[in-house]
Image (cartoon, rainbow over all chains, first blue to last red; front, side):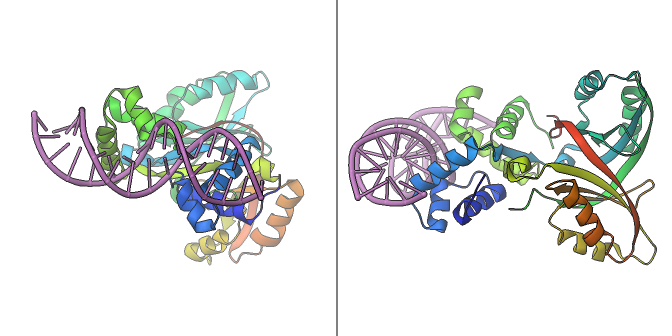
Length: 149
Length: 149
DNA sequence: CGTGAAACCCCGTAGAT
DNA sequence: ATCTACGGGGTTTCACG
C-alpha cells in the first residue's frame, strides 16, 4: 500500500477528528472535496482504514480500574472456546495469545479494584483450563495512540 | 453521569461508525435531529465522549508485530523522564505504570520481529533507569473493543 | 489524479411547545 | 427535552481534462 503526503494529511486529520468535514480537509490540503473523497474511497478499499469510531471515556462511566491479566492455561484448554467465554465477559476489552510465560494476555476495564477482584474470582478463574493468573493493575497511563503515520 | 436508552443508541451508532449522519441516527431512534444534536452536546460536555477517531489498520502499513513489554526500572529512574523518552519512540502506543512485577508496561507496534528486537536493543534498553524487561509477543488477537454500553 | 457543477442531504441554531 | 423551519454548507456523483 502506497500513500503520499496528501493521503497522510487526510489520515492525520481524520485520526484527530473523524467528524471533520471533507471540505475542510480539502481547504487545508488545497485540492477539491471530490478529490479527497476519491482518495478516501481508495484508502477504505485498501483496508488501511478500519473504520471511524467515537471514543468513549470509561472514567465518565465509573470505570476507573484498568488491569492486564496474564493467564496460564493447561493443555486441556481449547483456545477457541476460551476466547468465546472471554468475549462474553464485558470487562475484557483485549485478548492476545502471546509468547512468554503466559498463554494469553487480557486487558480488562472495571469500576474499581473490588469489581476487578470479583471479576477474576467469579468469571476468569471459573473458565475451564485456566490454571492461574497474574494481575497488573494500571495505576496510571500516559500514552495511548495509534500507529504513526 | 446518567444516560438513558436514547443516549445509548446514539453512542452505539457513533462507536460503530463515527461518520454516520446525525439525521440518520435521528431516523433510527425516532426523534428529531435537533434533539440528537442537543444530547450529543451534553454527552460531549460530560466528558463521556473523548473524541472521534479514524481507526488505522497497522497491518496495511506493514506493522505485523504487536508486543507487550514489562519493564523493570531501578530506583534512580524518574518516571516522568522515562515517559518523555518513551513518547519519542513511535512504536510505543501504550504505556502504563503498574502494580506487580514490572514497573511499567508498554505496548509496541513493529513491522516484524526483527524490528522489535532492534527497538528493544537500541531504544528501550538504552533508556536510563531501565534495568531489564520481559517481552510478550502477541501471536494472535481476538478481542479489541471499548467499554460496554 | 484532478476539476467544477448539480443534486441531494446534513448541520446548527432559532424560536415555539 | 422535544419539535419544525431555515440558511448555510457538506457529500456524492458526474462528465471531462
